[in-house]
Each structure stands twice: as structure tokens, then as C-alpha cells.
Length: 313
Ligand code: TXA
Ligand code: MG
Image (tube, rainbow, N blue to C red; front, side, top):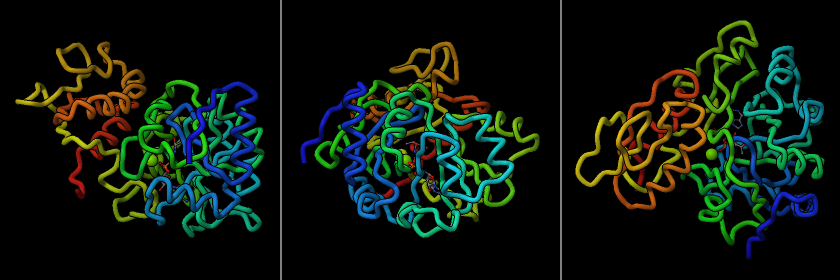
């Protein structure tokens, strides 16, 4: 299959929406990372997502919709969901809620779970696309399973060219880290730190989020330890590079590439995956400077620990 390059004009967004409604796969930008979209009501389309990514089938997907109203059709809504949706949607937040009886979602999306992960992205191209599709769109990050998430159309193409119908290119993703995932099937719980600072979520709820216990392995199954992995070895909390290493810096320091010379965590989040992609292409081991464990630094360090974790060949 040759992969179409589409741009975010109304005509080409319309073309992308038609492809999705026909059961084809289209990668599209969100403010977090590029997603690999397929019609969430079409089991064959969802199966094709897993195949294109080479993703283990037990790992469920996020359904993307254009509005809070569209989200409510598929799940049992709650007061906490209303509070968080009103505060943060559209935006870099995913809510996990119990499926409604007539949810219409293909069971492969949830990998058989009784809950559904839902997100209303704020990126204008994603908004326009979802409104035109007028169905929930299942979309994991548009990378091959276990690899670094894509924040540009070039990253998507590097992993998925020839495996999907089209890529909707609208430049680099402004947040650069995947959405924060909050579980609302029970007491509100942080299932994955991400592009929305968990402190803001706690402030909106008026109480702390439960932290995911390590025994709840399936609560966000994508949280496999080795994930977001570049090909090169990654060493964390490095003050300076060792022989042969490239250094990914943070703050005012000599390095091969700097996440943010000003020490700004939002800027660092936005450039993290692109920096890992670029340094990985140099074919040398990657040392990474310490990143403060506060605000978006929590999610950045989460992704870096996964990038550095031991992995299978
Ligand atoms: O920013 C994002 O969230 C991006 C963009 C494209 O929206 N998507 C993304 O999808 O990161 P993915 O598939 O790479 O990660 C989704 C995470 C996985 O860790 C998965 O296990 C978890 O969401 N998840 C999905 N459904 C779930 C459910 N019902 N319960 C708990 N976790 C769930
Ligand atoms: Mg992913």
C-alpha cells in the first residue's frame, strides 16, 4: 500500500475522514503525539491498527471523539468525569470509564475490558477530523509497538510508511508527551502521567488521585516497563557523557542536544521524543541529564525510565 500524504486543508481533512469511515487507517496529529486512527466501531479497522503497529492484542486503545457530548454516548458518566471533562477537554487528558450497555465500540478497542479510555483532543486538525468522521476513532500513538512515540509526520512515516492509508501532516505536536490517563471506574486514579500535570487534575477534583499500585498491572497495560525505546542504550541522570555517548541535556550545560537550555519543562516535554529520535539516528549510546521530578518532569522521567529499561532484543 502506498501511504498518502495529506495536509490539514478542509478538503484533505475531508479525504482523511472518508478513509476512516471506509475502515482505512489514517495517522493524524493531536496536541500530544500523532495517533494511528481507525473507526472504533469497526472491528476489522481496529484489528488493522494492532497489525500495523505490531501491538500485543491485550493492550487496549483510546477512543477519540470531538466533544464531551459524543464521549458520554459510550460510557457510564459520573460527577468526577463531568468535572474533569469540563475543566480539561478538549486537551491532553484521557478518562477511563465503565462502558455503557449500548456503547457501540468494537471489543478489540478495549481488549475485552469493561472500561473504555476516552479522549477529546484539542488540536484543530484532530477536532476537524473527528467532527467530520462523526464516529469514535480508536488511536494509539502512531509508532511501531515498543518504539518512541511520534511528534512529527516524518516520525510516523519512518515507522509506518506503506502500512497505513494516509498521514495527515500538520507539523510538530505542541505538548509532545502522551495524554495523562485518569481511571474513573473506581476512586479517581492516575493510570499514566502525561501531558497534563497531575497537580492540576487534583486541584480540579479537590482531592488527591489514587496512585496506581504496581500490582494493578492491567490498569494501563501499555505501561509495560520497556516502552518508548530507542535502538540505542539509554543511561539516566548523567552529569557528563562517557566515551562514545551522546548527551541529552537539560538547562544551561554543554551537550549534544538540549531539551531546554532555559530549564523549561514544557519546552522539554515538547522536544523529548524528537530529541530521542534524532539522537538515536546517530547510532551511539545516549546519556541523559537529570530532569527535575516536578510538574511535567514527572511524565518526562516516566518516559525516560522506560526508554532506559532493560528490553528484549
Ligand atoms: O496522547 C495520547 O494518549 C495518544 C494520542 C494519540 O491520543 N495516544 C496514546 O495511545 O498514547 P497509546 O495506545 O499509545 O496508549 C494508551 C494507553 C495504554 O497504556 C493503554 O493500556 C491505556 O491507554 N488504556 C487504554 N484503554 C484502557 C482501559 N480501558 N483501562 C486502562 N488503560 C487503558
Ligand atoms: Mg504508545
